[in-house]
Length: 227
Length: 227
Image 1: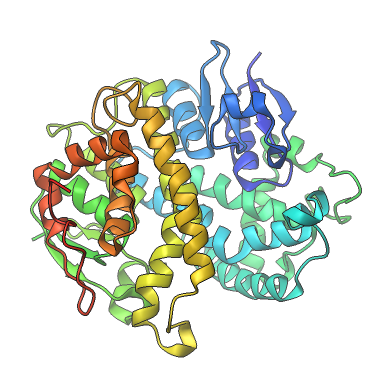
Image 2: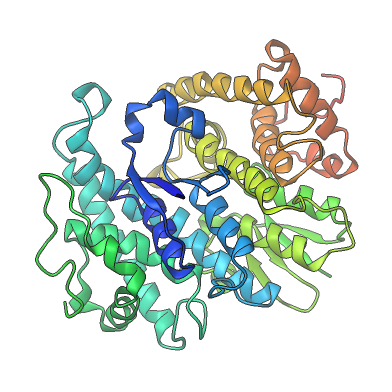
């Protein structure tokens, strides 16, 4: 059975789960608290980070970029998540980079570290109460990114064009983590919300919406398609 | 004429320059101080960051990942920088991610910000003297990554296997920036140094070694192949 080592509130892990679902891949989900630096896990991925995918032949693929490209290349009969031309693919990759690097640095890394990771870490590793200055700055930056999604949605059906791509799943993976924390002011961004309603309605999103972090229940509307 | 908007001490820009050279692409190099947020540049890349590549048909490709994949896909007659099988490509992408994300976060982002960017920024934007605590932590982390390169070199000719790939050019782009600042203790890591000598000897490296940042000359051995 294929396996995915993941964490529930990790955008990179969620992105891979969404891609695996779109590619109709059955897999076992294994929660890996990667900050514990378990030896057996470091044997799988020397970077010591989720996600790690183990294919049915035992092939180990580390990191969301490597896993998503690997699935795209090895499952050609499934829904394509990258477009046909190099130029269109470059637009998808620009947006993947936007969310995995820019959005992560300006919004999601900070919010997830302050509001989630600090609950699980020892005091020596940075555990404790969130730094509200970081949280406020990230929430401020989030609005700029919701504006950008809204701007794209004025002309496009999905983030990179007419079709659903890896760019949408990347952005949705980040935003669904923030949604779990209850931090996305969707009602003020109707175009972005409409995009998120559509992606949240896909069957592959259901397991992600069923996640529950112990001691940290999601807000009421988190799993609701009519939010 | 194709154009590349870049900065000299930017690993992402250097990576693209190295790839363009390996792919035999002629291009004009345009220095873009992206922190000045020039309107015309934001028109090319709404993320406001180098590198941006403008192809001869006017196609605009933003970000090192998008540009490198675009060049790989559109120049099939040149030296391939990604291997033939999905599994081997996944290993290359794991290592690209290692350097562009892990090495960047633990080493190069901090060193370049503290020792280079702070010279050019206004005091309000963080200009001024480097924070030595950040510099020390980054230099400490660098040793762990040089160990990892050495470990890979015990079994492999290049980082991802027997052939030069995008993983080598990614790692070399980061390390050459640190080398410009004079921060790499090569002599203590002979296997890593041997790898870097080989990649530094490639013709595509020459223009990178000719870079001079005003007011910040590189150390004597920076451009020397016998360092």
